[in-house]
Image (spheres, rainbow, N blue to C red):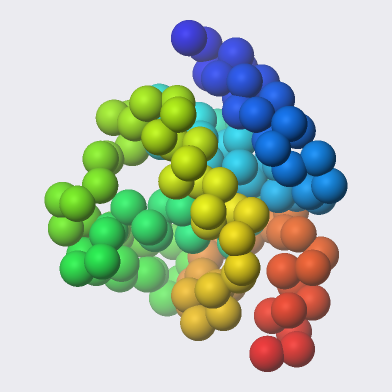
Length: 133
């Protein structure tokens, strides 16, 4: 499946499952699904805090994420509990991304992402929550 087709499929899934979600969250979801299924970072808009959170999640519970303090490449050292990007099925990627993109914002990790990663196209509600915390 072409990356654009995969993006459209994930976008459609998002519209059905989360019809009230912001366009920023839809982009984060579809981009993240494309990344997990294909191993390629592409799509539309972003990267947002939520997209980075999906990437960070690949470290697993016992893995490590080592951010570059100059907003550069972050190293993810996975613990092996999750598939690597490019090894996910569409269904499993949707389930994994859905919890991260549409669930509550994990404040400590979101602050870390905002401090170390280049982020834009963030959901306005996420930015408001971060600003108040």
